[in-house]
Image 1: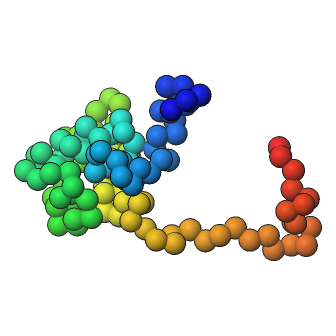
Image 2 (image 1 turned 135 degrees about the horizontal axis):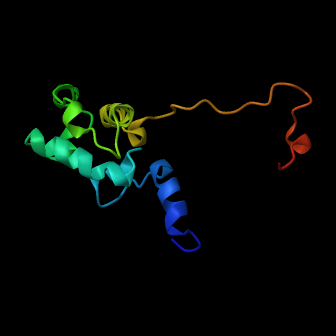
Length: 113
C-alpha cells in the first residue's frame, strides 16, 4: 500500500477485512502472521481452512497446547478460535453507533487532540 510502511501495515493488518481476498482468513480479524497456525490446525484436523470457519464441531476438537510457541501464546490462540467461530466479516450490525448525548457534546465543539 502506498505510504504505508511494513511496520505500519503489520500493526494495521489485524484490523483490515478483505472481503474478496485470496485467503479465506482475509475476511476475518485473524492477523496474517497467524494464518500459518490456523492452516496447521486445519491440516491436523484433515480439513481446509474454509471448512474450519464457523464450524463449531471442528473448532471444539482443537487442543491449543500443541500450538503454543515462543511467539504465539494461549491467549492469542483463544482469540483465534473465537474469531474462527464468528469471523468479524460475517457479523452484521455488531457495533452500536456512537451518539452524542449531552448538549455540550456537539460535533462543532469537538476538536482534534
